Amino acid sequence: SRKVTDKAVGDRPVRHVKTIIIGSGFAGLGLAIRLSQRGRTDYLVLERGSDVGGTWRDNTYPGAACDVPSHLYSYSFALNPNWSRSFSRQGEIQQYIQGVADKYNVRDKHLFDCDVTGARWNNATTQWEIESTKGSFTADTVVSAVGALCEPALPDIKGINDFQGEIFHSARWNHDADLTGKRVAIIGTGASAIQIVPAIAGKVAQLDVYQRTAPWLLPRLDRPYTKPERLAFKYLPGYQRLSRAAIYAARETQVVGLAKVPALMQAFELLAKAKLHYEVRDPELRAKVTPNFRIGCKRMLISNNYYPALSRDNVDVVTDGIAEVRANSIVTKDGTEREIDALIVATGFHVTDSPTYETIAGRDGRTLSEVFDQIGQQGYKGSTIANFPNMFFLLGPNVGLGHTSMVYMIESQINYVADALATVDRLGLRTVEVRKDVQDEFNADLQRKLGKSVWINGGCASWYLDKHGNNTTLWPDFTFEFRRLTKSFDVDAYETTPASEPSR
Ligand code: N01
Image (cartoon, rainbow, N blue to C red):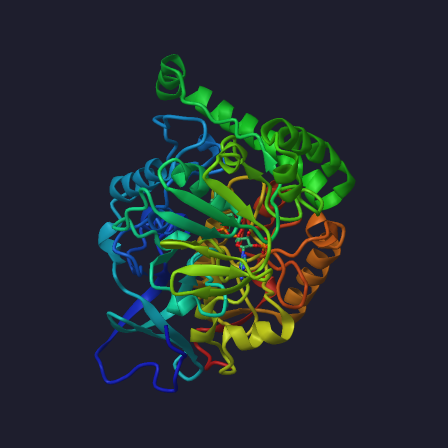
């Protein structure tokens, strides 16, 4: 990506589209389907990859699977009776998303391999000017559906660029690199790493796991569905809806411990400690992997094979900080040098500092990153941001979840944005921009609620917090409360200009 320039729209022919959606993961694809169902054909989805799926297309690392139960991890309008197990693996989820795109026939509304490199609001034309690798566009409305976990973050470690062996990020797995019999290091022990480690430990000669912070682990209640269950899901749609509702309700109770009364998280901690005690018999290793913060402060991880993998003879957990990476080795701060052939970087994503923020310039010319630099990553209902008229966000600020399915939040936002677009048409509005006072009040309330949460008080640093120390990524309440807030577009919260008047 590059920064927006004053010439966001160059000399190339410009195509006008009423609504442009950026990204076709669960969010962008879901909105595209909704718009098509409403008979709106005047939209286009710009997708940088060559297929739909977003994070499920990109994260193909060995062991990749979802930590939300399968039946909750689908659109409510396209239930999947064919899930093969209670927690689905990446391939099955990606297949599901592809199947939905085909079924609802929206692929021809996509421009694939189209990387959006800049978007700039033009006050005079009241349109967005968009630059992409497939040409320039103007649009009345832009919906950013790029997701929070899509820009890999590489660690700033001395010498890492001079490493001579295979090196890749977990979200950009190099399937041509054969790790069989190799000496491999992995940096990071988050949700991605704890799936990769057991998946490769048995085939590599040596695996060094570089752990900065030990994660909390809970049991993964994953199992294949039995034939009778699968038949029931297929032929008794009510059965699937019921399972879904039961899973939803059970997961929603976690909100109380995470967001409202963190002391309740001690119950989870007891379970996690028992698991650790039972699965890691070596006291030295157990001490190394015992977390030092309140469970829930970082995402709670679920795995039944991570601790057993760490206990293997060919796996070492390295807790001394990394001093530097050399051509064929890693040197830790205690001076130890460990030789390796391959390095897997499982260090997460740019979440509150996404490079895409530098490429979107709003009404006063400031980019999203300039605005966020000052006030933090703030928005209104995760869907709009003051200074960015006629721009909507799916998975914007404070809509993330650690405990249940993001698809639920996405569908709530799709309701909101689809209703916003319909309202703009119905009222004949040229521009809508959330009022700054409304946004401020919304965020003050969010931060008040978050102040009680384990994410702030749990004694850890995490990608949930921005550089101001605020949690600008997670939703601090029940998800049905978010559904209620996004049920319809509240135009009163917005500054609007009618189509007949020039812009502000
Ligand atoms: O990334 P992370 P992830 N030197 O940011 C470490 C979703 N997800 O890709 O904890 C050394 O969580 C860092 O250490 P520390 C899910 O929402 C879901 O694993 O900061 N270490 C941490 O251990 C998840 O939360 C699923 O001290 C460095 C790790 O790298 C999110 O994606 C599966 C370092 C990064 O962990 C991200 O998960 C996968 C450095 N310089 C992902 N920089 C499922 O549904 C970072 N680290 C199962």
